[in-house]
Image 1: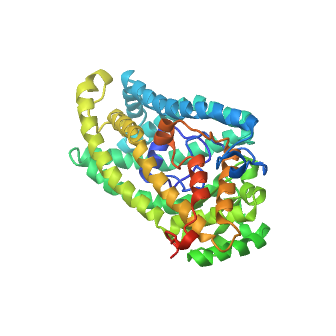
Image 2: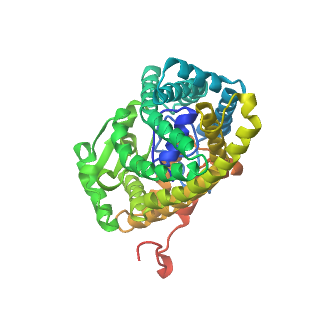
Image 3: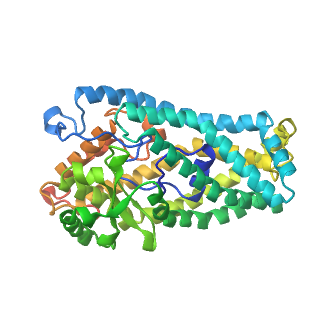
Length: 447
């Protein structure tokens, strides 16, 4: 499950730092697709009874979804490999070493050298990421997945880079200092420092989100919907007051249908996009709300943070061992004078980035488990509140899938490696069959 969302593409370094500081917001819909947001949903989706499938698309949209089902994995894997290649080239061409020596010439104090070096590194990686980012947004525009103009998109990209430089630079300085003062156990100290950063990231995301989108209390525009949502909240025991149920004005940038949870403690909230609240029936919104409530009630955020902490412990340890060997073997060729140097820190970034990519299926496997639990919880939460929970859940998934042009038959390997949620087809099929109340059965969460 991922706890921190940003609306534009980051550089490889920024994505790495966001991984270290938390794992992206749990949303009702978040596959590996390069979405700026899914296309507008039509209300004329085919029901399971009509075609024998729980999720289906009209022929024209099916053709687009199939094409996108090929493009999205190419962007995902291509972007990951390109990020690794850029880091490798910075080392192999001695560019990283040159950047370090240039920073030393420009400033006398070590901390100022570090600021110059790490700011320059982020700018270089951000620039290298631009071609794929532009291509991804072009695809979103072409298929009607995004309505955000280039000026606004570039503005978001600039804000994302500014935030990355503002927050990542001191973090990188701190980690680099840890490597220098504790060359044998730096990975352990870095892991300890990462733990509070993960919590701060989970708590702080709602404070950063308004820089990219406009929010207002849902009760301001849809008070009747809030009344219905409060019935679900009362049943789930979700302690999120109406003033912390927000409407995000996503329609100015995207045709997305989505909702997500974010924050912890006093910052926790549920956000429903205005496209979701305005384009699908209220009973489907209630299911989505129940799904998002499930993430809180089932402690998915806390479990995700705890699991991420354990995961990062072993990740840091393994990467430290591999990076040390890599620096010894290639250091003279790269002009790297040990991992404690600025250029040596790029070796660490390379190894962590490579390991994160290789271990991505493990993270996504956990995320898919949490999302499946939330689907069950959401369907049970609206039982007795809506006329037919199965129909509401299946309808929501069909609208979400059609809006995103999600492939009804994704490649199994792509789904295994890149999907943070089960495929829409799997989710809709399960929802259509899930009826624990039939013949005296018992639901999983509401006994």
